[in-house]
Amino acid sequence: MGELGNRLKEAREEKNMSLDDLQTITKIQKRYLLGIEEGNYGIMPGKFYVRAFIKQYAEAVGLDPDQIFEEFKSEIPSTYDDEESVELSRVKTHKELPKSASKAIEMLPRILVFGVVIAVAIVIWVISQQNGGSKNDMAEKENSSSQVEDVSKENDYSKANDVTGKDDASEETAEKDKPAEEEKAPEQPAQSIAVQNTQKRTTTYELSGTDKFELEISSKERTWISIKNGKGKTFYSANLEGGQSQKQDFSAEEEIKIVIGYMPNTEIKVNGEVLKYELDPTKVTTQNINIIHKKE
Image (tube, rainbow, N blue to C red):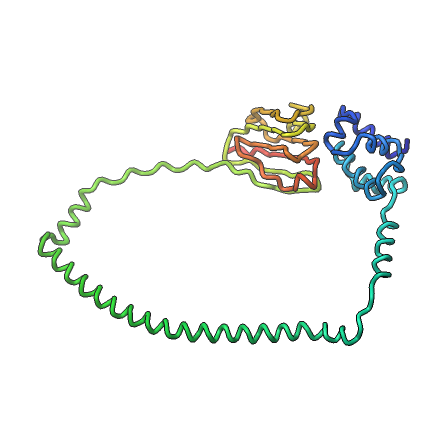
């Protein structure tokens, strides 16, 4: 067993995770995980999978993959040789086009641009001709309709004065007699959950607009979670089975730190509102979620 395998195994055991637990979180077969701990990379499908599996292993046990690759780069196989062979095969199969064909290809964009310009000019000319006729018709219709409306308004006004016989003074008196509308109570501001910053696998949110802080975590698959406050006090640290949820009231706390071992299919609610993840759970499977409670 190499130094890298020892480092990863110690981190796994510190979290009280078995290889079966790790297989559930990372979706990597147990024999490959054991091969990583023993330094037996020969059983892997290829060099690329070795690096990918090590990265997922490190994220699942809370280690920084970039730091692991840098510290143990002498033990981890490089994928450069495979990439170079692919590039060489592409260069060998590439064929040069004849000069006549190259010139034709160079002229093709210019011909296409010229054709598009002509087509646009024709379309603009046709639209302008149509709009010119329609605008004249619309102007005549608007003039005739406005005249009819003016005449009808004058007739309505005169009829209204004859029937009602009310003057401006009576209308003002009626307005004064109306009861004043009740003042509306000021609306209470709704809660807000805003992203403060994001660094690698950690996203920090700020909860404001409410004194209530009720947290609920649920998952459709088995995942390991840890919940602590800003002072390091642990409220929960265990595997959460698929279909189960963990719900607690942290209204008295100023900050809560959450570690999710496997983010896909895991949902976090704050006071019943679903938390929108800043990092893609399918790409960053292990994440740290910090929530700062800004009380009013």
